[in-house]
Image (cartoon, rainbow, N blue to C red; front, top):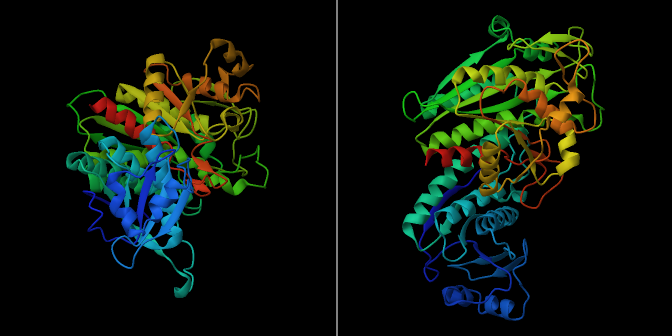
Length: 492
C-alpha cells in the first residue's frame, strides 16, 4: 500500500484535513507561520512548545486535538539537531506516516517550513516508506476493527516549482521502493525466478524498456557453469534477466545495475539452521532493488542508458545439488572450487558480472545480500561498499548518503586473496570466517576486472528482523535509493 503524494501552498486558515503533521527541529519556537495552527488547537500548540512538553528531539511525537472541521488533529514530529535536513525530513515523514496509519486518518498534510525540491522529495519518500504496508496475504479483520489506510498525503510548501519537482521525484522513488519491498515480502513459493522475470517484462511494457530473459538452456550454451551449479539443485528454471532503458545518447556506454536474485536460500548441501531460515526469502533483495530502481528511473525519464541485470534461482539440497569439493567453470573460463554451497550468491553473480562485460559498461554496481559477515562488521546501519575503482566507490558512497542509505568502505587489498586460493582450481568460493565480506567481494572482483565496478553488500540493510521505528520488520527498500541517486547524478 502506498499513498498518492500531492503538493499545495500552506494556507492553514482554509486547510481541511484529518491530520496536519508539523515537523520541527530541536528546541522549536512558535513562528508566525504556525499561528493559524495554534488557533486551531485553541493555543495547545503554543503552550506545548512554551512548556517544553515537546522539545523536537529525533522521533519525538506529540498528538494534539483540533476542531471538528479544518485542522482536525495535529501531530508534532521532532527532527532533532541533524545537520542533514533531507535525511531528517525523510525520517520525520516515515514516523508521521506510521502514526497516521495507526490512527486510521486516511489523509494528512505535511508541513516543515520552507522546503526546496530535494527536501520536498525527502519528505515525500519518507511518507511513502512509513505508509507502506503488506496486507495482500492477510485476511481482513472485521469491519469494525479496520482502520483506513493512509491513501493521500499533501506536502505544504511555498515554493511552487520546488514542491512540484519534489513530489514528482518522490512519487517515482516511492513506486520503486514499494515494488522492491513487495517483491521482498512475497514468499518464495510466489516470488520465483519466473515471477521476477514477469515483473521485469511488466516494467518494460509500461515504461518503454526492452527485456531479455535467459533460461537454463541458454545459460548452458553461454557456459555459465558457476550460475548453473547453484541452479542444478532445483527443478525451477533459473533466470538471467536483462532490462534495458535507453533514453541517453545512442551508443553511449550504459550504467549496469546487477542484483542477486536468490528467491530462497536453504544453503544447499551446506544447509542453514532451521531457526530463522524463513528469512532467506529475502535473499533476492538485490534483484528487487534493481527492479525497483528501474521502475523509478523509467518514471523519472532520466536521459541516460541503464541496464538492469538479475541472476535468479533458488539454492536447494537435492540429489542433483552441487557439493562441497565440486569444481565448476564460469563463463569467463575460470575454474572455481566450491568449499561451501551456502556461498552461492557469489557463484551466481560471477557469471552475471562476466555477462555485463558485453554491455561495454561505463560503470557496474551490484547489490547482494551476500555475507552474514557484513552484518557482524557493520550491523544494520550501513551497507558494505567495495570496488576496483576508488573514484567510483566514492561516487557510490556519496549517492548512498544523499539517498539516506549510508554505506561504509571496506578494503580489497591483495593480501586477502590468499584466503580464497584453491589447491585444485583457480579460486575457491569461500575463505572462511576471517574477513568474510572482503573475500566474497574479492571473489566477485575476479569476474569484474574489465570495467569500473562497485559491490554493495546489503545483507544488513535490505531487510530488518526488528521494528526500526521508520519501518516495521521486513524489507527496507535498500538499495533502490542508492541506485537511483547514482544514476540521476550521472544523468545531470
